[in-house]
Length: 299
Image 1: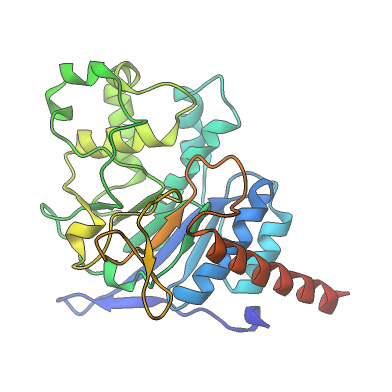
Image 2: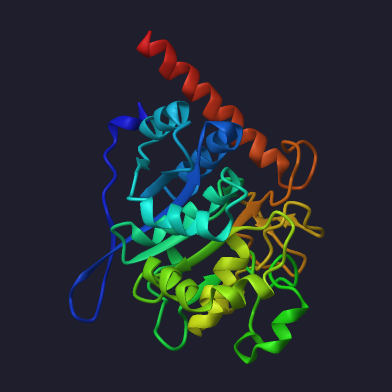
């Protein structure tokens, strides 16, 4: 069984000779279990050499915990009291949705570099090339690609620190707690909460405006995936057009660049017939079969 395999820390060695702990993180619960299974299977197929850390969205995680055990992923429960208090302060009327801010607990994991991905994603290539590329003042926060939506309203124009910054979807990011920490969120909101509420776009948006605001207020050097890795694509949207596949079946964007992951951001139904859906369904089926086999063994 897959859970018999103990995951080892993936490490890089700095110039100082100190090893760096690396990992991938996500948040989930049993409500989105249909997404958890293909996500875990895709990680196992493409990134198993890199430890995966799953942070619970809430206490509804019985099946999710079992799936993590089966796949050898780390089900972790970092102290969420201070972050939950911040979420309540910012979004007092939305107790369920404000838990989306728990993705920031990825910054509290025992890792020197972390790649965070939403669970409604499948990983399509090895993320190892992303590690070891962070550099203060040059590359401090990596995103998939720029966006223009779901971040700020027009009031941002009144604030110089928000001028000409890269807006991004925070369903994927890579950083280090040396570049961005949980304390940055607490300190910046303590100082600039009024500005945040003035500029953030409304409409059931919670984590994404905050991720953008804190990184922009801190002045982090934000780069996109295709700027960081030669031949990488910034494409990840499940409705992407012009996608082709190489001889190994890995996806390429319309320019022939390598697509690293597919994200069903905003999807209201499970995948069926779009360009990445066959891979999602294949992973979902394989994972469901493994879960059933594990249940039979436990019985």
